[in-house]
Image (cartoon, rainbow, N blue to C red; front, side):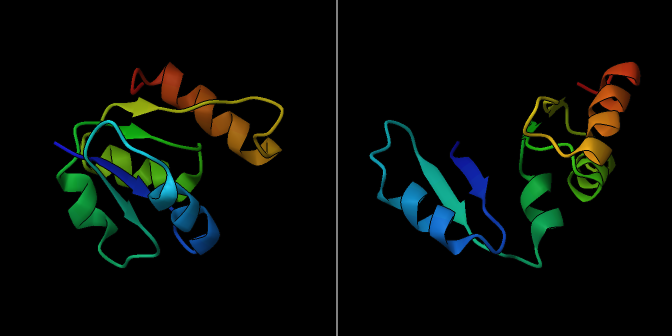
Length: 89
């Protein structure tokens, strides 16, 4: 099963990821209106604690791996705490 990396509108990141050598199968996606379909194929979600990302993951019933550190924007830090408090990841 491939690793699915979704980069949204960050095409520069998508290009950099595609150029890296891979030891496992992977798919690098840019912006997509089919995120719900892609997430239904996943086993878990790893990503930033943005409300849209987390809402999609919760709706799909995916376990969540997220973070809250100095790089996390302040309003999203509460979302990471919420994931932990709810036992979602």
